Length: 388
Ligand SMILES: [Mg+2]
Image (cartoon, rainbow, N blue to C red; front, side, top):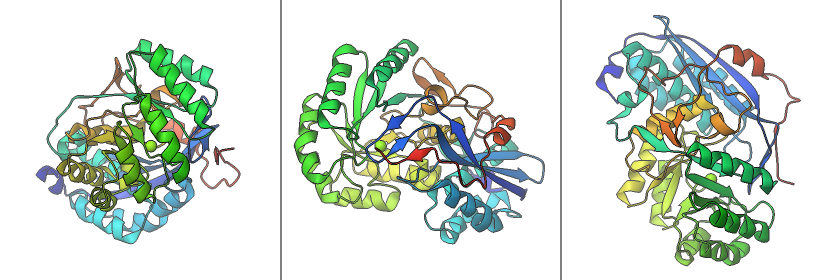
C-alpha cells in the first residue's frame, strides 16, 4: 500500500449500511440459478472526522457467494466495532481484523475495503489505483455476458454491443440443454465475426455430461470455457483441461489466494476469473492474480451482479494488475440495470472501460437512490431464484 495511506491520522466517525434491490431489464439464466426482477446488494457509507465520505458495495448472490442479509448483518453488527473510531491509516489492521472477526461474507469485506480506500483517496486527492500499486493500463476491454433464455433478445443485445464497439461476449451455458448451447454458440460465431466469444457454464454440468458436452463446445472454438462443473470437482476440472483446446477458466473453484494455490497444485485451469466479491476485496484479488501469474496463468476481471459502485474497485484493481489481461465483465451498470447507483454513467468508451483518475473510486453515487431502492428489513422481497 502507498505510504501516504498509512500516514492518515483521521478516524472513521460513522458507518451506515443498507440492503438495496435494483430493478433489471431482463431475466438471466445461469448454470447455478436465475436472476430476474432485481439484483440485491449491500451498500456501506463511511464518514471520516474531517467530513470526507466513502462508499462501498457488496454484491452477493445466494447460490454463489452468499446473501445480502448475512452481509448486511456482517457489516452492521460484526465489522462496525472494528471500523468506527479506527484510524484510516491503520487500513491494513482494520482489514486483517475484519478477516478474523467474520468468516466468509467476502462481499461485506470487499464493500468495507472499497469504502475505506474511497475515503482515503479523497483525503489524499489520489485515485484508489494509486494507493494500490503501479498503474499498468488506462482502459480495460469490456465483455458483456449473454444469458437471456430468449435468444432473440440476446441477438438484439449483441447487435447493440457491436455498434457500441464492444468486442467480447460471454455466453452463459448449461442452464437448459446442450443443443441450445451449441445452437447459440454456433450462431454467435457465424453471425458476429467481430465478437470474441467465451463460454461460461457456472457449474451447470454434472461430471459425466461435462466430459461429453464440453469437448463438442470446444470444437466451435470459444476463446475460453469457464467452470463447467461444480466448484469442488477439482479432479474433473483437471481432466477437462486435458481434453479441451480452449483455455479452461476457474471461477467458482477459486475464491481467494488459498484456492488459487490449490488450483495450481492440482492443475485444474489455464486461467482464473478474479472477483473482489469472491476474494474479499481488491488487495486479496491482486494476490490471486499474482499467484496465478507466477504459474503462468492469466486472469479475467469477473464480477457478480453489481452496480457501477462495485465495478469501480474492480477497475482500480485491474489497473494495477498486469496479469488480469483477459478483459473485464463490468457490464451491468451500462447494459443490465434499469438505473445504476452512480450519478454519472459508468465510464465505457468504444468498448473499453476507462480507469478513473479522480480521487477515491473516482465517481460519486446518487445518494437519493439509496432511499428509493432500500429494502433493508423487508423479508418479502425476492429477486433471485433457482433455475426452473
Ligand atoms: Mg463465471
